[in-house]
Image (cartoon, rainbow, N blue to C red):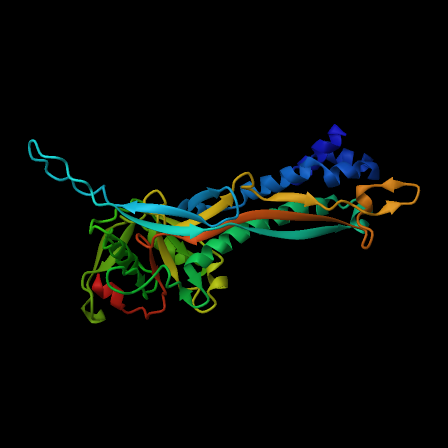
Length: 357
């Protein structure tokens, strides 16, 4: 049985060697109960989940909650500005500290997959491998889509996070370019806390749809950047070159869900988010003790007269073995400061937000 345990774990990892092929040839249906219900299936799920790309976690604040009730978190500004001069024999002044808050909760998500009795009879072990991989991918994609829906909807950047008004200006219309990216940086630098102090953002994450990946890489990986030295009328532009100062300041992320969630302008929208160590802009939460997806097998209820119960007989109605994945998570918007979005809908001529900066 240990040999078959190792076999299935190799299959789950996609590492079937010559010894495994020999075991496959000698394997009988009596070995299937372990393969169908053993812990190797759970290990394969967790391995696939942990290996699936989730680079969005680098610009999202991660939280853990103890139950399904709505949780509340506070974020504080102030107290880290300039120090006051302290006169001899006089008391120190208290810093003015303001608070903001966001609320969130987690919910249960899941999906079922079945393995037919015919596949089991045919010893289709590749079908067994696909089950944990498919469920792990579904869990990861659920997370990424949930995060995407925090900052974009079917018509573009969400107004709960982005606006073009004064004071909290962080929404533009320019297509992605070095000029518009610079405008985004300047808009972020204009953000102030409740006490009028600047908000320092050390790391910035650029999130683009697949359609803008090449454009973004062309900017970030260029040796030199070319700028117009005047803002305004196109015929007045005189180009000048500079070293690529931006490539070490920005981390690129390609989000395939942007054009799926935003069916209007998802291929042109682009976003800047602060590092979560600087500002809690986007928040993702997991349930304590259930931080990763869990796989379950439906207890088979087909009992052969005189033969007892066996997992590979499956359920009574369909002769299938069913698995489900359960994943508990949630997401919320925190603070808009330090973020920036552009619809990318303006013409390639200089846009209003580029002129203003």
